[in-house]
Length: 615
Ligand code: NOJ
Ligand code: NOJ
Image (cartoon, rainbow, N blue to C red; front, side, top):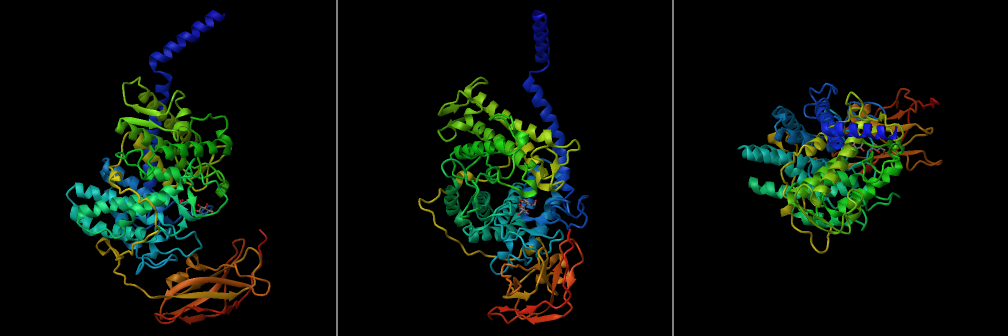
């Protein structure tokens, strides 16, 4: 019996080997899955872009909607970050040969030129570019007045990076003057913003933490280096690009000796281990980069050490990862302490982990060597136990170098396969999947999830964007300084921006005494855009930070155009979706003339009170 069984076992082993070695079989399956899902993901992203995206009726031309989801969560807005990352993907797809995408790129160019000039709660475009830090807008490109984590300073850098990829394509295809006259003015505004404000804190990419974010700083640095080179090629000046070495200097301070602390200048009680760091490194991936570049590329020892420590935290955070050994891909989320929508793994970060590893392998192969040092040793030990601290030069298929490349590629594939396991049969990608069951949840059809799947697929297929010139980035100075360059801002009229001029704005503090029950909120609404133009969705929320038993104060600060007269009222928002309650009075105020001091209203609620819906 025993003998027969082992013969049967041997024969079936031989048969399966003669068809394909088990690892080939697995990778062939993964390859065909990825090819099919890549097509679904590309279409899924396009379906979320106005004006013709089938999932987002009402979105304006060139506006990328984060998700068609309108409730829990309401993602029916356009975010600068999600949009720019999506367009970077589309522009690369276009450059790799999908010429049908060109109209989407031009729509984005025109939409962003206009959007840059839209005044919003982060500020106005002129004279100081402050409005460029606004994270999100309505899907028709009008301002969003709700309370939000603002400003977010990654948006201008990411938009510039996307538009610079397109500009370089234009230059290489005999359309330099188009790049110079139409696209560069948009880029120049964004780079001005980066050069002026990089050293000021802002909200991180997860919109929660006010501080300094690795992802933001890394993209800001890339944008300035790439900007200086593009400006040279176009024969124009980049205001702000001179800040690049200082930004690179600051970037070094996120490393704590063991891993990348993704948010610094903040005390939020977290370890700092965050998918932020993986997304940062893949966003600045440069196939030509040296692995010891201070830009912290995927093949950099610090990035690899960080990758291991970060990924290992998720092994124990999510029960769907339990039992998966070190060195094999797991489901990855934002950060271990996350509770948003249940604090689950995200598709886009899980595929980003795969992309990161494909990037690193591509860089080692392009350099024909790999240097393992004390910092990166633990990362490699999980994958290739015989590894030691030394340089591995490329060799034949059995060389240690080749074996390590195969091991890291298999590790990358295991993240992609993990994603495959939790992607539903129809291929739709939500934002998250349940940490215990793997079921998709939170926003459905998240554009960024789709974009991230496509970029991962590009790297796995050996498609790499052109170098952004990281080799020519100036080294950071010996001592860092928090410097700034005054930006130069002008509407990109050749791309369709309205010819706005600087508006003089005056601070108006809306103070109203309004007794409310717990769960009830107060907004101010009025006849100007800053006050929502009588559209309740755009009204300005007041805060109850100063509310006491003695004084039921609700308050908001707005910046209104000097000299204008404003009609406004306060509105109560009830706790269970009961109708809004408007004041029964018409209020007016006149904003003081330019140069005057700000004013504060001293109002008292006039109208019916609300009642809790007890829901
Ligand atoms: C909405 C943001 O988009 C999300 O990133 C954040 O986690 C939640 N607000 C909670 O603050
Ligand atoms: C929440 C995420 O935290 C943020 O990064 C993203 O921009 C928005 N959702 C929209 O997708």
